[in-house]
Length: 348
Image 1 (cartoon, rainbow, N blue to C red):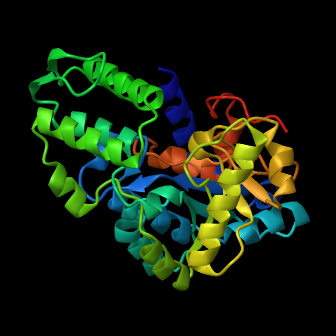
Image 2: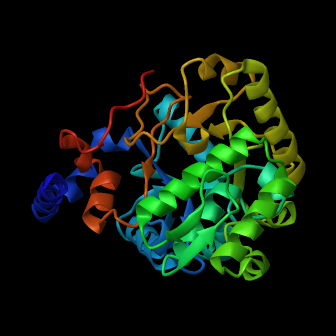
């Protein structure tokens, strides 16, 4: 009901020409919309996880809307500099993509190139170098793909017997057991890969085909280098996609990540995205000591010059965000509806 009311209110604002007026206001032009994306489907990933994946058609629709309505899609560095100097182009928007998954190379970049829009990829480099499926999301995808089956599992400690994969609660219980086992046993990369293969065998999934097509892989260093040479901006996302609360380990994540990205691109890395949106206040001085100029969160809002540069909000675009919601965010009118953001902003 709440979502329906928000959609209705936004539709009313749009039909009353409020959207058109909002995107021309000085209030909007002093602000920056940072759009965040995770993945663009190569096959059916958007059906499996619509919160993480959108279709190529939806991405193109978004970009077409931005061009048609006169939004200025600018680079992240230009956006961050202009936000705090007060010198932003009118209706500024920045496009960011998390993790550097191969589908950016295959599906997203060709669309961005067609529109000549700049973009930033926050690249996690461990999974670029060890170019195999990532345990958590791949196990979840395998279980979803085999949701029509009832199987007997022995591969994961704590989970056994006959299990109906059509039941989402069963799949979640298996995933919880996998995460617990991987952490408790300190599985290395080879052991995680072997776990995925054994899970595939027990569920009847074609794991070799998934590896051959490199679904849910991060792009390899050579692919990232190719895109960097074409103008794509690559920035920090930690080396191992984690944010330790220990300062020395946190510093290592950033430095390992920076060293590898700069070797790929030949350009400095000064901007950061918190993996999975996880951040703590103590991270801010640690990032400043590492000469990081900006850091983006998963907190939904529009950026203003008053925001802490290391806690910048983003709109995470998803399959279930309607056109009117997306348009409302971009023009700023959506922020005038109390509670639209869904959760509190980051504290500066």
